[in-house]
Image (tube, rainbow, N blue to C red; front, side, top):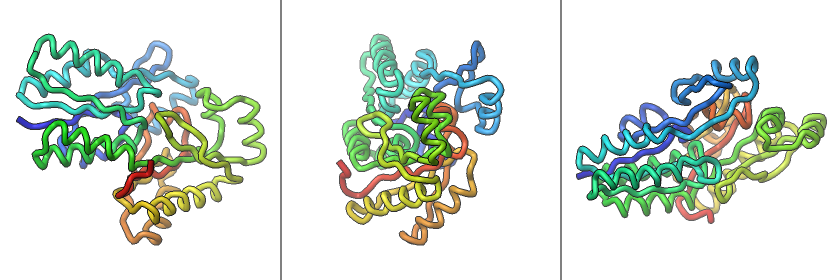
Length: 285
């Protein structure tokens, strides 16, 4: 009997790493009118071309059927499950997973399933799933693996900045007047996720200065609390991501992996967004 990890597609964990750790993924969906696409099947460049032509889409949680099938396949093998999902304040995925768990228990009374609300998304969510999967591979119990995932959420942060405020306005995250004034003055917010919701950590004039400030905020956390792991996120701006990775490498002497943000999270900030997801050795909060 082993513990297996299930996360969702907004974790954006590198495919090779995910495969090596045996992490299972259920996919959120993107809806353009009556056309439904699983996020895992959509490439960023294709998605943003579609959004330009068809307007802002909506997103939806994984289907009950997909979550049930994923859980059942694991339980049938006699294994236990830890689910680590994106913030319950951002999606109904966490709530639906609890409903599916009860459905599973009706048919498999001895099934062991625990569900963690990461209170975030992207690689801040991904790191919680990754450390849990490593612990599971080391043979730790379901309760131990759950505790490790929860502890990671208290040591992690996600900082990110948009290229402009257009997509935040389209997604309803910022008012039209604020977006207009912000774009005219070239004010760029540094965003973060606290208590499960997106919030503004700082406001900076110009994206270039915002990136440097974001790097400084990250480095300040590392100096205070130590570094666990870090990843740079971007949406269709790989050169900027490489530049940021170089800045962090020169400061910390570590190689920093780069990974895309997918459509479900990306539709709120748009192409050109860049960020840093990380966790520290000691609790941040």
